[in-house]
Image (tube, rainbow, N blue to C red; front, side):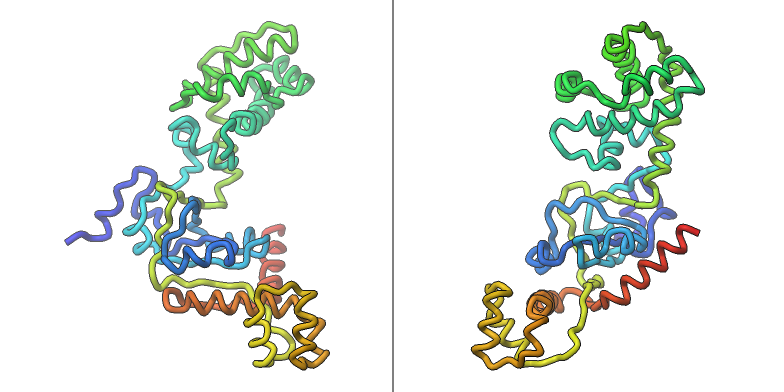
Length: 315
């Protein structure tokens, strides 16, 4: 019989790295149909930190899943982002760095190398003051578009040395042509600069604690907890609820006339758009009740906790 340890076969993590729960934040309306099946396509990133609720929930996202780690690891192929390992972050054609910078477009080198070049520029004074000055003066971080467009399809980077060769060549050719100054950076020096630069990048993003679903399909364990931001109206009325639920395709303006036709008291009219959102969420939540533990998270309470969290973090 397989034990939980049989599933710990991924080199990016060990038993000690596994949290009690995994978390993911999203827009409920966009994912409700897939959540009913327990299979969510295209959702790659989840977090081992519950603190993502304060960083991402409420920013165009109104729902969050808390999933048992043991169940999730048994049902999914998953890898942990190793923020403290530059070798990992540049392997597989810089997959880790691309993930950190959210570089998903086909021509991703502008975004990744632009950010990386900015970090190199900050570190360069410790190695070569003249080159550091030139980088600042001539805008080193502004990656040459023609170079990135031409290089992107054939780039093959799997380790620090591979990346050092690419950056060294860029400095000694593309950047040198821009400044009119010849440069000669040793490969060993470039590797040291890149290692330090990528360590800083990893440190910057490490609080995200991201783990990635390898096959782009997240299987959500049954019984997971689904938190949904909501706000109860000042008054509860079954008739209002039924009228809104039976006219979900109507605009807020049209609902004004629907309320009038159904003799809904005028005191409810000012909250038409609020009722539409709450009823829609309530209907979606009810559809998911058999698969998940539903927790309604009061919006005002959440905002208060979020404010306290950020105040504490800034002290």
